[in-house]
Each structure stands twice: as C-alpha cells, then as structure tokens.
Image (cartoon, rainbow, N blue to C red; front, side):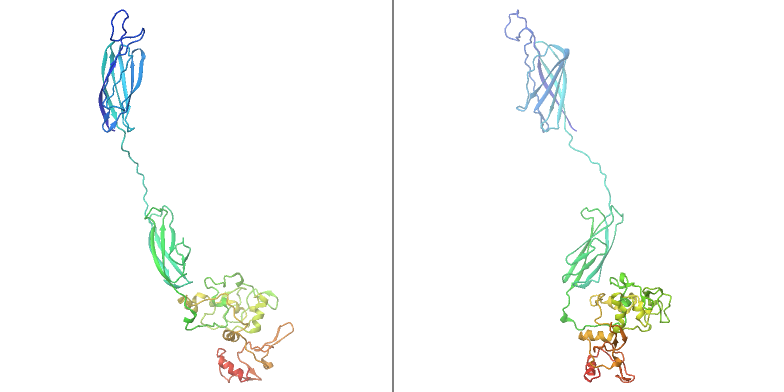
Length: 471
C-alpha cells in the first residue's frame, strides 16, 4: 500500500458580536445573540498521483462539545475554497478532513488543531495522508500429483478377417500410482462394430471391406487434457468371396459319431453344456433309468453312472472301440418319439453310446482353428435321413432315397401293424434302400468274395448296379 501526504491550507473564520452602541458601520454585523460570519479561504491540491479527489468531508469539533460537519465539492476546480462560519471564539478546535478518490480505492485523511479568535480569520495547515488501495494479492497453492496411465501394447487376432467375422482385440496398460480411480477402457473404431467397447479385450466385427482403425483411450479418472493415454491399431476387413470363386467344397464325414460325441465341448456350441445333453437313459427291460451304464467294450468299466462320460479315460482317441449300431429303424427306436432316452438300450455297444471325446485334443479341432474363416461348425444341423452313412450320402448328393422295387424278402424289413420292427432289413417294405453294408441274395454276395464293401459315394457304380437289375 502506498501513502501520499499533502499539506492543505484551510482558512477558518470566527464571528465576533459587535455592540449596538459602538456606532460603527461596516465590519462584522449581527443580530442580537448571533455572530457575524468571518470569511476565510482554503486552497487544496486535489491531484494525488493519477487519482483525483472530487469531494472532501470535514468535521470540526471544539469547546463546549461544539461539532460541525459538511462536504466541500471539488469536482469543478483544481482548488477548493470554502467559508465556514459560526465558529465561536475559543481554543482547542480540531478539524478532520477525509476523502475518497475517484478510483474508489484511494482514501485520504488528515487533521489539525486550531484556535478561533473573535473577528479574525485563522489559517490552519492540515497534513493529509493518502492510502492507495491494495493492487496485488496472493494465492495459496494446494496441488495434487497424478501419474497418468500408459498403454503398453495393443493386439488383434487375427489381423485380417472377412466381412461378418470377428477379430479378438486385447490391450495391456498400467497406472503407476493406481489412482485417482481404476483404469477405464474406451474403444472406438472407424468402421465395423465393437462388442465390449468398455473392456480391456473387446471383440471387433467386420462390416465393410477395407482397413479399420481401432483406438483405445485409457483413463485413470483424471480427464485433464492430455492425461488419458491414446493408442491405435489397424486391422483389415476382407470382402466375402462369391460362390463362383469357390474352387472346391469339401465335406468331411466323421462316420458313426454324434455331434456331442466329437464336438460336445466346442466353445459356444450347444453341446454337452446344454440342459438336454444329460438325459438319463432308460432300460427297456424295466422301463426305469439305468443306475450304472451297461458296457460291452472290455476297456470301459461297468461302474459308470447314467450320464455322459469321457471315453478317452479308458480308450485313447486313436484306438478302436466296438462299433455302434447306426441303422434306419434302430435310430428311430433310440430317439423314442423325441424323448432321446433309448440310445443305450437299443445299441449293440450299450453304454459306449453315451460317451464322448474331448473336442480340443482332436485333429479336426486343430484344423478348424487353423482356418476360422473357411470352416463352419453347425451345432443345429441334422442329418437328412435316419440311419447310417449310406443313406445320408444319397441325400447329400441327390436329396432322395434310392429305391429297390421288388427287393428280395431276405433283405426287406417287416413291420407289425403298429409300425414296430419285427425283422430288420436293408430295404423298407415300400421299396426304399436304407442300408447297404453287405447285401446277400439267396446266400450269394452281390459283391465279389473278399471284395470291399460298396462305396456309396460312387454314384456311377450305384446307377450301373441299379440299371443291371441288381437293386
């Protein structure tokens, strides 16, 4: 704060009463009981630095509790003059001047003592002290320190996928001071869609061909500009091939296996984890569920409970087990009107039909994983016909069942009135061929002795065989 000092001369007058008998004219005159005003003058320098005083307030106190106050307007002049009258003669007066500059913050004040002599003007010098307003201030600094997070790396697997397929994205980051909040992940992409955009490892789905840039913003709760870490990775979305571009369609038949037997534990498939996968099998002899699964394979113990089990515990996947019946009429009996509870009792392999192999260790699983954009695993695909591979091969190629009009009775199945099987056969009573492992007519093979079983995929051979009247 700065101080300005000014000495201000001020003229004060006192009034002296004159007697009516003195016969004098001029000078001071008054009415009885009043004093005539004495005229005085005061000059005030109003400029204080760059600040101007527009108004001065005064207060005069004196003997016998005398008090008088007022203001002096100095806005129209660089000096001030005033006549202050009516001051009784006496000693011990004090005048106090105060004023505030036009800047509103600089204030001035001063005082002086004087005596009033009747009929005289007293000149009083007043020393004014001016205080300039405070122009500076201070702050109290109370700050916090935050170490911003860092992104250590981004990964995408695979780096390229066809439109409609997904890419697994992952990130690694850290926050050295673990605050002020837990790490928050926010992913964005220039195309495609993100599942789990607020997670550390989202899934990206290609929707349009071309590159897509995925950006991660990693925050620790401090969103001050520049604190969240940013990093990007680019993946490529390939257009889906047209059917005309396909050179080959390969169908792999894993014959004599159910879906759950091979793919029951495939991630995401409706397999062994499905509530309908564990249906207690019924013993046809008692009509009650088995307590323990009956077994005919000497490698599998007969102490297993009535539920799916891992065959590889007892027989490695690369070793043979006993064969399982997979024929037209028997499968319908096993399905049991949709109850799916007679696979064990109807099968010649008994409890082995309730077993499975772990999916992950199979060579076919490794093949599928090595070419995810070229292989589809259908967990809701059902074979076209009941029974084994022969009839389903026909449906794969021709979408129809072969016929054998007038087939010998020896190979023709017979059914009772209710439709129950009384004699098994390769040909249905109405002439459809539903199985062909080794057909004999009147004790003679239709294939040369010692020859291989008929390859049902050889359509030309089947056609020639039918044309020859063998079927």
